[in-house]
Amino acid sequence: HPTLASLFSQFSTKGVMRLLESHRCEVNRIPDGATLVGSSKRCSNEMILVRKNILTMQSHPDLTPDLMMEKIWPAVVGKGELSDAKKDIYRAEMRDLHTKPCLELIREFLKH
Image (cartoon, rainbow, N blue to C red; front, side, top):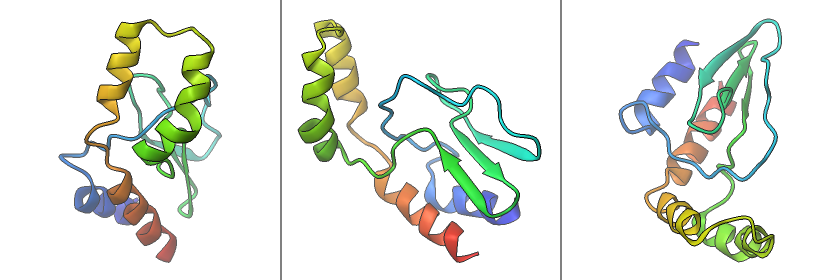
């Protein structure tokens, strides 16, 4: 998808987009006719292009770190499943996210 490739080069940092992930489920198999356009350490099918006009993401470009800490983090920590070391890792990952550039990419993608 030439437009998507162009948008990635414009809005990502060296082809990388750091976004928040907060899920336990993922799309294990992409649909016929769809194209895998992004993956992550935690999700092999992170971003999928269906036809030329549908872009899906497993991550949450809609969540800013502040919103994540306010709305979701208390529930995650409240489950008691994370060690202090894991909490520190996840907090560190919330720094330097590409939320704004990703939202710009989505806006531009929707125009085409």
